[in-house]
Amino acid sequence: MPESKENLIIDITGFKCPVPLIKTRRAVKQSPDNQIIKFIGSKEEEISRKEILVALESMKQPIINVEIDNSTGNWQIITKKQST
Picture 1 (cartoon, rainbow, N blue to C red):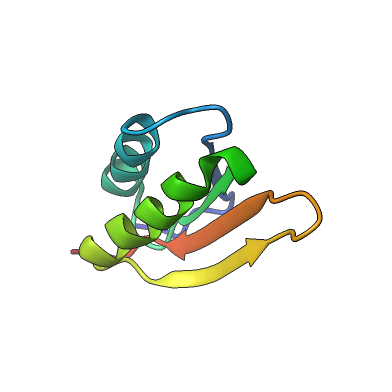
Picture 2 (cartoon, rainbow, N blue to C red):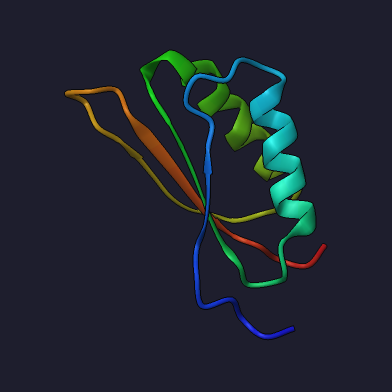
C-alpha cells in the first residue's frame, strides 16, 4: 500500500477511558501501513496517555515521539503504522 501523504490526528481531549483506547485500536487497525498517527490530549487525559503507550506497544507499533508541554500539560504521541 502506498504511504499516506497526510498524518492522521486522533484527538482524545475530553474523553475518558475506554474511549481513548478504542480510538487508538481503531486508528491502528484501519490505517494503511506507514501511516503516521498522532494522538493528542491534555493534562486531564494523563492516564489515557500512559494507556495509549501500552496499547501501541502491545500492538507492536513503534513510538516515534512523545512530547509533553510542561506549561500546559498537553501531550502528543506519534507512531507509524507497521504491518502486524
